[in-house]
Image (cartoon, rainbow, N blue to C red):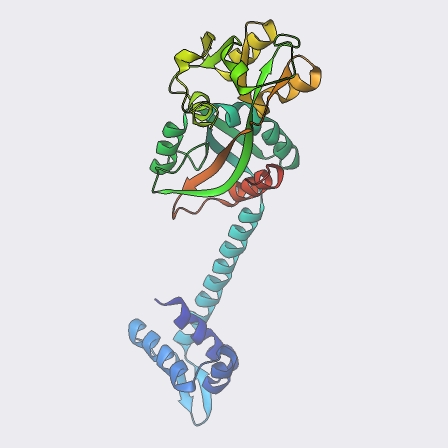
Length: 297
């Protein structure tokens, strides 16, 4: 049974007129008659008696009117409920992220978002960008935050924000707050392991992408941004880290930034979803919230 046919029938019934119903619905009168006739044929009943210029509902027509009117009210309630659900920001938000955004960008912003929308709770998965892209593509994750989505054809970038990689050390460790690029070869350096997003991002920088890691004075290889940060504070060596990672330590004076003359190391992070897959309303609100707080690249 066609819902629009029922809508036409209801208008004719209420107005007791095909011509008034046609004006109300912005249809031609023959079109109104056709919709009612098709409904009568489908139900094998007569809905109206035409007596002269009068349109009189039959007993069956009145029965259908009561049922159809109730159905239309229920449909309206469903629509209102869905709209209310769309506006209500609540439920689980699952995000997959590379180590830096997963550990240092999402947690403080999720806390701020939760204060504004207390019925939301988060599940954050931390993995390398390749794994996150796979999970977003397969539908296991609604949102991902990665540093290189170019190879993924089924991925859509929703928002791109910028990050900066900086050289940091324990105060006084290097002896200067600014060095030449050549000086980097003599400073004891701490590095992430091969294959990590941070290591890959660092190696892509124009300062380092043509340099063999063997040419650097690598003091230690560590497995996470946190381990690098703690080793720097302990004085084991200097390292190149995201500004997001050391922001609080810089403010507290626990580490210092060492400028490299003529060099700025930048990268982008991308908030991604699967192409042609609508994301729920509370996710869209969260993405908008992130885009307002994370500067666009």
